[in-house]
Structures are given as C-alpha cells and as structure tokens.
Length: 317
Ligand code: XMP
Image (tube, rainbow, N blue to C red; front, top):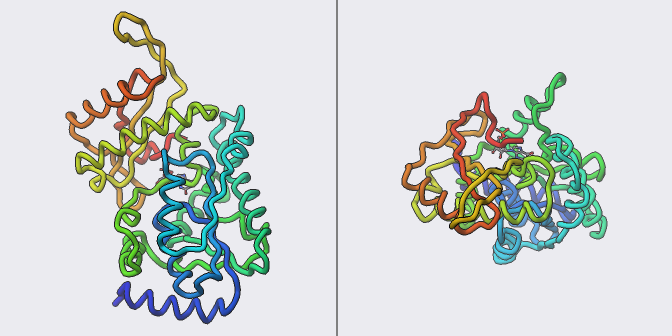
C-alpha cells in the first residue's frame, strides 16, 4: 500500500542516486505541486537546487512577496525575479485568449532561460508535473484541436537542453498534499486553490494593462479574503474573479457612474476536469458584492457565474 512516508524515503534516495552532485534548476509558482517537488529535491541535494520565482505581473495581490518569503523560510535557495514590465510589454494590445497565453508562455521561457543561463553548470530541470497534468496536456493539446494551451508542460526542456526530473509525475493531487504534509510544509500552502500559470492574464478578458491588473487584484483579494473569513475557502476547489470587457451604468450618491463589471467564479471539483459552480450562501455573496463595489474603485457591478464545466470551463479564457 502507498504511504507518503515511504514515498518520501524512496524518492529522496532515488533523487540522490540520479542527481549525484549535479545542479538542478526549478521554476516555482507558489502552488502546491512545484513547492512539494522543490522540497523533495532540496531534501535530496540541498544547495545544488536553484529555484527561480518569476513575478509575471499577473499574480494575486501581495503574492510575490509572501510566497518568496515562505520559500526562504523553508530554506530553499531561491531567486525572485521581477519581470512584470516584460510581460506587460509582450501582452500590450493582445486580446485573443490563445495569443495572450502564448505571449505569457514565451515571455516566461525567455525570462527563465536567461536566469538559468546565469547559473553555471546546471544539468537538470526540475518540474512539479503531476500525473493528471500529463493526461490533461495530451487531451488538451490533441492533434486536431487545441482547447487551451497550458504553458506549464513542455517548451522549456527543448530550448534549454536540460534533462528533466519530475518527482511527482506518478501522483494525484491528494497524494501530493499528503507528501507535502509528511515533508512538514505549511498547511496554508498545501491547501491553496489551484491558480493557472498565466494567472490573472486569463481572467482579464480582452487586453491587459497594469491598471486592469490592479483592479482585479483588489477584487480577487476581497473575494478570497471573504471566503477565508466565512470559512468557505476550503469548501470550494477553486475561486477567483474575472474582469469583463464591459462597462455598465450605475448610481453613486446622485452621480451616474459608468464603470467595470466583474464576475466571481467559485467551483467544486475533484480534479478540475469537470466542475460544478459552488452554491455559495446568498448572504455571503451579498456581503462580498457590496464590499467589492465599496472598496474597489472602478467597479460598479458584480455578477456570479453559475455555469458548470462542461460546457463552460473554469477560466473564462
Ligand atoms: P479550465 O479553464 O480549462 O481549467 O476549466 C481547468 C484547471 O486548469 C487551470 N488552468 C491552467 N493551469 N496553466 C495552468 O497551470 C494554464 O494555462 C491553465 N489554464 C487553466 C484552471 O485554473 C483550472 O484549475
């Protein structure tokens, strides 16, 4: 029978044998998978693991600083790279969802490539790929149709001529969380909702500007903070907000307003392949809606997405 203790023991020994004195580079995202993978590799080879955490300007509010801090506390050898402007430049004027994903993916590879070339003698690329990613990327990028191009699988290795090490590629998400627990990783990190690699870039419909990112970060922060305060965060599989390319008329005091609309999305799911919209309490939705409208300048209307997957996807782009 599979146990996480045994998995850790066997995997660390395997990694030591496979990697020897070689250096490994890894991109971390703050997510569960890349964090658990990094801690495993770190346990095996210590300072020979070099981690890179890129601020693509599309992260949640305050996330870059918080996550970087917690990685440092875990003893990882990590470099934070502020690449916000590079991403915004690459995205300027792009509105097509696939074009945006490709621009984000390409910019990420460029930044990561540059950073890892600054390290000498790296032989391996570590990745937090888990078993469902392999299946999803085959089914998503089937030969006939691309639904959404996930940028976290593929791309990097070909360009960088590195060997790949993926210690979690036989595991499902719940097993990854158990392994993380065995490794002593902070439960708030292990319990985090999934967050897409392209981040808020695929939650801002239409073109992306730093200003729109700021608005969405504020909205998202009120929504996620509200879920935590009301004990709902762990009851949903994923949640976030979408900034719509729509303005609507409203009234504030005796002034007419013409401002942005956001849609909140929360789903229950076991693997993200199918999902139901979360039946959040009306009272909670009411509170969060007025909090958002009162606190976030530029937003005068909040809607709640009641679509399931399929046929809708979790992200709007
Ligand atoms: P969809 O929108 O396809 O999303 O229903 C299913 C799950 O995958 C996440 N997602 C991504 N994750 N890179 C990622 O790392 C991506 O490009 C990407 N696109 C979607 C989404 O957040 C959800 O958890």
